[in-house]
Image 1 (cartoon, rainbow, N blue to C red):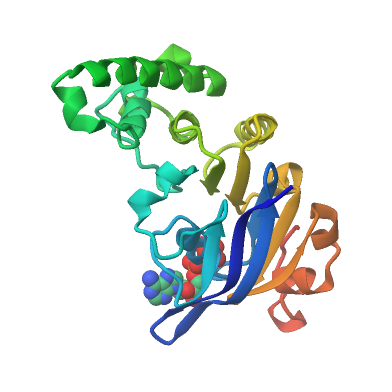
Image 2: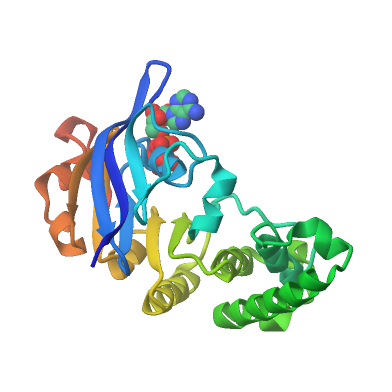
Length: 261
Ligand SMILES: Nc1ncnc2c1ncn2[C@@H]1O[C@H](COP(=O)(O)OP(=O)(O)OP(=O)(O)O)[C@@H](O)[C@H]1O
């Protein structure tokens, strides 16, 4: 299998703060890769560079054979990368279905304007987008609330809506940013099942997550960061038994705290 994503010697500095230092890793198409590390390790920074929110200070990021680290973020989605956001970017006054459709419109060939003026090409595309949106709402189990305003949904369903919206764009790579944040135990377990179903569809998935049960269950590979550096990469079992990973989570004896990995 070819590498879908390649992060090559990436460093990110914010003024004097080195948030990521010389990070290199790659992953194969069809895999789920988890990104973990203690608070402030540099996970969000790396994730934001992969989705082109900002560029690296040094190094390169390649996706599907193309260099993407200097592209503006709006050029990322058409290449086949979709992401969810931890702070939920939903339109509260729109229905659940409309929220998924909006995500598709920003990606469409004819664009929002021709759809608004109901030009012929746009009408056909609109129908296709409607079908895709429904398909994903059914996939995540939100078809019963398709006509409900998103602002009336509980957090668990909003996270599913974010997932449906990202999936509707038919990405090759799905970036999940703390998709289980705020979910209860059962909701988190259901989200893990859903992620594994997405994987079965052949979508590659990159997961930043604090919930260890979810990461350990869904990931083929896990990349571990600590203080901006990659300290380990391997299967869930390998990283759980890695001395540097255990130290990073447990801290030195003086700063020891209860953390379960
Ligand atoms: N925009 C910014 N400006 C300055 N410093 C930043 C910025 N973003 C992140 N940092 C710093 O970079 C380091 C890594 O932060 P980052 O948010 O990537 O870590 P994280 O692993 O996602 O943390 P958490 O698990 O707490 O969300 C931290 O020291 C943080 O304070």
